Amino acid sequence: MKKRNSITAFSTFVIMLIFFGCSTTPKTEKEQVQSHKITVWDKNDSETISDSLILTALIADWEKNFSKNRKPIVVVGRIGNKSSENIDVSLLAKDIERSLINSGEVSFIADKQKREAIRTNRKNSSDFPADKFKKYLKSLKADFFIEGNINASVDSSTVPIEKNYTLNLEVINTKKSSVVWKGSQTIVK
Image (cartoon, rainbow, N blue to C red; front, side, top):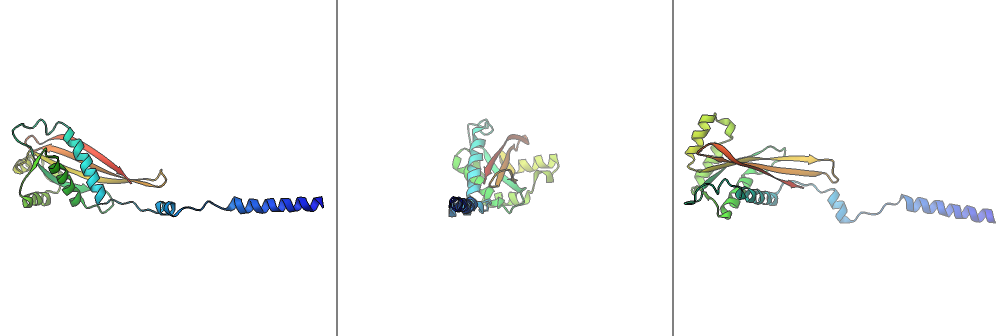
């Protein structure tokens, strides 16, 4: 009888061990969704990164050293997409313009068509030799020119995998053809 009780107890123990040991804690619906969530660049990211980077740019001295008589005139040039994703860089450029205008610190060329033509015609400063680029900047009738690019990288060392989107901008003084400010901002998704 003792032998039978010990076999029964042992069998019960093994069955419980198998039953409870092999079961996993069920994931909640929220955890399952998060593990399969695909993160991509969206409109909110464009607004957030533009506002943040322009705020940082305006704290710098480039526009404060300009003139007390009037606000500097700024043109936002091409924002390049160096990522493998399809990011709407025209929306990003418009968000940068919106952030600058709403700051009240700078002015823009009033004619929207002129800004669009400048943005369309000018692909990249590397398209111009240095002397032609200086003439081009002066022809804009603007004091400062902003250009930049956006990059995306994947950090697979984290769980879940993270994407880092980095916006790099530079402000160019059109009269001196010199870079007066450079900055970058990153969003992690």
